[in-house]
Length: 255
Ligand SMILES: *[C@@H]1O[C@H](CO)[C@@H](O)[C@H](O)[C@H]1NC(C)=O
Ligand SMILES: *[C@@H]1O[C@H](CO)[C@@H](O)[C@H](O)[C@H]1NC(C)=O
Image 1 (cartoon, rainbow, N blue to C red):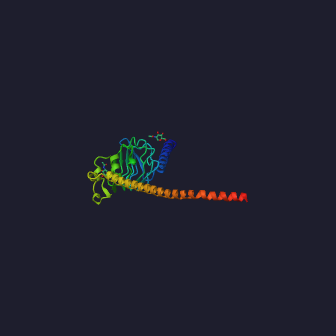
Image 2 (cartoon, helix red, strand yellow):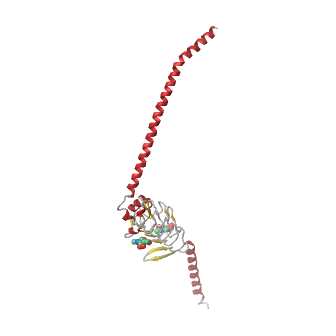
Image 3 (cartoon, helix red, strand yellow):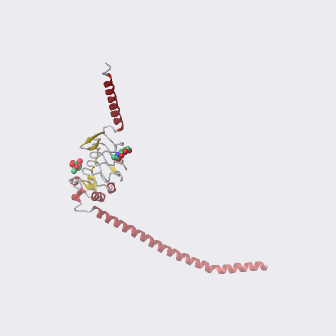
């Protein structure tokens, strides 16, 4: 009997260690997420985990991060900080409507693939992707076709073959709706149209200011003329009054 006991104790200890390890990782990792090693890459998978925001506590040695098929709506500044070796970021099939500038800060050096397809993006500032070297998938979003999108697409390095699926869901011109952005933009430069309208607005504003300044000058000169005339009259009337008062004072001293 005495020979059987030690192995039992060891196996109990091992299973206890395993249990605490599993329990530990279950509490640290967000619900529905797990870590794996795939083809030598550290992978962190949270696909279809009903996440509403980017989870905290993602292991900092993660190479590939899968957050697709969730309900994430917003990517704040530094949403992916402390991931210095991240190569691939999969965010497709979420509900992302807004990405703050600086959301991908810290990923510029290593990230080579960023999937934002099948979200609810309407308009994104190009600064969001500044310094990013990754190939980006922006297809299947309800894009507003305007100068902002034109600038964005000029800045971003699109994944090959994905540009045809960047379709105008809305536009100032009804005829653009439902067409791929790159097809629309062969006929129209959204930014030059925008520039023309701002130029006209500038011109109108400048003319308005000019008219105001001129009318004020005219008013000022007229008012001054009036004042000068009145002042002159006052000055003319002054010596006689002074004389009179002087006279009266001399009279009083005499008296
Ligand atoms: C992850 O964090 C640990 C502890 O803070 C640090 O020692 C390690 O170098 C980090 N790993 C990477 C890949 O940055
Ligand atoms: C880009 O996203 C679309 C929609 O999710 C997908 O069908 C397509 O395969 C993606 N393209 C690449 C090159 O990954």
